Amino acid sequence: MTIADISIVTTLSTVNLMFPIAVGAADKWPLLNDWFARMQALPVYHINQTGLEKLRVVIERIGRFKFPTTSETAKLEAKTEGEDVAEEQADAKNLGNVEENK
Image 1 (spheres, helix red, strand yellow):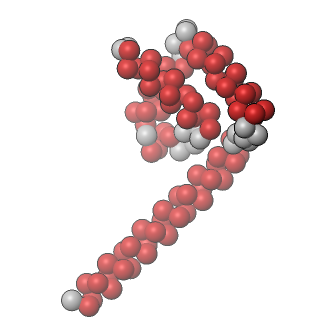
Image 2 (tube, one colour):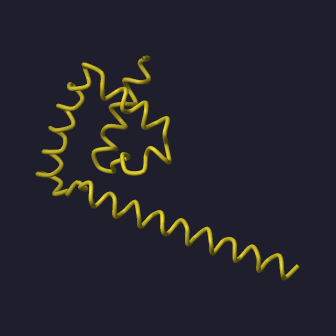
């Protein structure tokens, strides 16, 4: 472990609080998911967790921000994947049209 690991785990933990990476992370980012799990398993990670919970409370009270739940994240992930597939299909169709026009 390096100082970079400590630095980035705090940043990634904060991002994960607002935009959970757990949904689909095993497929999309397996190395990141493995690394993040190892960092969370460290005996001192509870220090970061305490700070995250305090941040959550402050943001919810002052910023009136609603953090996504696991089910909301899953719905968003499914929607994003569907949009990606539709976009890829549209790109393939457009490429086919370009090739026909040559």
